[in-house]
Figure 1 (cartoon, rainbow, N blue to C red):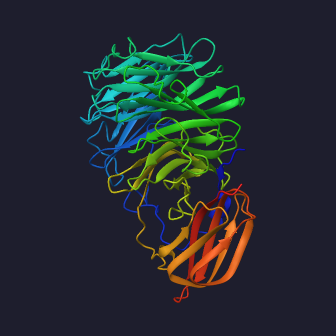
Figure 2: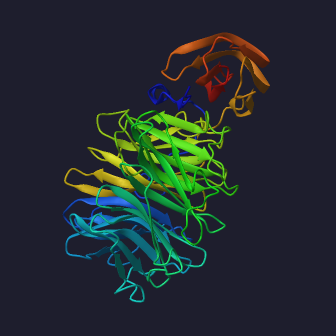
Figure 3: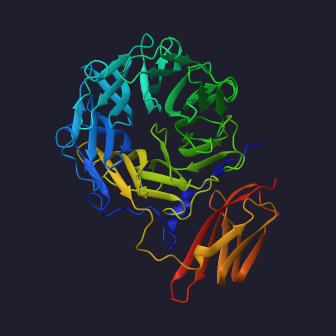
Length: 512
């Protein structure tokens, strides 16, 4: 039997807690925390964002059919020392040039990955820029590299820089029947690395109906991880896929089954979009599942799902998004997990959206509203595609919004923590143990509860338990009759100041 965490975000959005919450818009950035940039007269699209050591923000994307790169100062103003007025555009093939990812080298140069050509004859594209936005003439031909893998359909989707400066690219190519994963490694000057699988190129087929690579990460030991999705006959659907390679490009047999792991999240299509490796060697993959669910899975270093994360290693969250291919994941220094995308739960149009999970896979109630932030920007659809974190902990969300005329690139910054709301002294010391729990769990407050009310909601927003007039330092909730799964606990208490304290916590019930 499959058990997945599913949170009712519509319930969480109906009423915001009065506690101090991380994630408010940063008024010191742009206009009330938001900056939108139009390049030319056509549509612009954001695909990736990185933050430099000096906290300047660099966004990679597309304008019309060209590669685009924008750099902002930390306050959101365009950096006029970069390119032309802070903007760089590059036409490669005269056809379609698409950017999908960006990485910063240790020397400050920028490497962009994507694909270029005229449909369907695309090649994997690499472009390298100097720190000032000029094409790096020492890289490839005039700063660009085109790599042909198969007869057609070669696409680069993600890029990472190894500790030795070599560049790894994950993508896919058309094998004549369907799409396979491709991993390419280049030397620092843009040549194919002949020490990597003889010619610098590795192709991997996982399922009978093709697979797509979406993200790449390099472990501290030099092994390379790719995530994406693969069609598997056992579920008749796409599943998360992770492939791990040794440093020479061979499949790592110590990982999963012959170097490959597939994960069924919701018994329907699941799409892995972003991967990160933790300092302890664990691996987190973020993406989305059928019917617009945001999905996260955590694995140990050998590719097994981590039973201490979520339920059976998996979390899924209704986000109101359908088939969005640009989720991005980032890790905060405190181990909390950020995953961005878009949501249609608050309006007919999509909004920038971001969820934060604890290292246990629980929605973080101290972030936004019940662990989720949504930000409307333009007059139509707003789609966040990338997330990054500054050294001071502030969160950068980048994507595309509609300004009434065309799509523009938009960057939003959020403060961590919020300082203009005073946190309730009662809520700050509430603890719940055990969690996960089987038959009962205890709510404890050092300062004590006074006429508090506790309500417990299931994953579809139904109140399944309530208790009023709770007083004292501890209260034990007996719950033998609850079904196994995830619940949302809410404690409400009147304060002596006349305000109301509200506290939220996600609970996992492990009884069968």
